[in-house]
Amino acid sequence: MRVLVVDLLSWGFILAGCFFTLAGAIGLVRMPEVYTRMHAASVIDTLGAGLLCIGMMLQAGLTLVSVKLVFILALLFFIGPVVTHALAQAALHAGIEPELAEDRRDRLQRPRSDAATRDSTDTAN
Image (cartoon, rainbow, N blue to C red; front, side):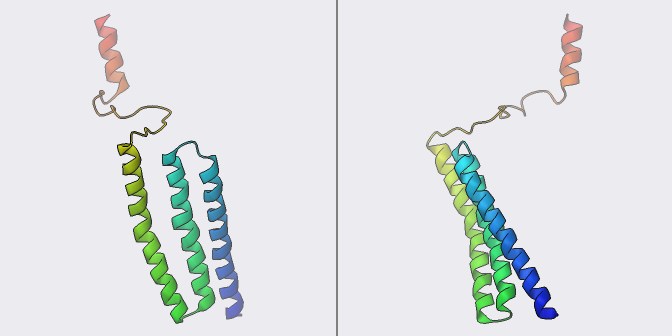
C-alpha cells in the first residue's frame, strides 16, 4: 500500500513538472519580447525542473541518487534567478525596452490619488 502511495505521489509530481515544462516552452515561443520570454523560461526552471526532481527523489527513495537530485535542485534554484537577472540587465543595457501596456515609471512623481487631482482641477475652473 505504501509503495502505491509513493508511486502515485511521485507520478503526480512528475506529471505536474511535465505540464509546467510544456507550458513554459509554449510561453517561450508565444511571448512577444525578451522579458516575458525570460519569465516563461523561469517557469520551466523553477516549477518544471523542481517538480520533476521531487518526483524522481520520491522514486529513488533515500539513496545517493536523491542526494544528487537535491544538489541539482539547489543549483537550479540559486543559479536560475541570478542568470535571469543578469540577462535582464544585459538587455536593458543594450537598450531593449520592455513592451508595456501602460508606462508606470513616473508613478511616484504623480499625486497619490486621482480624486485629489480632480478636486484641484475642478476648483481651478
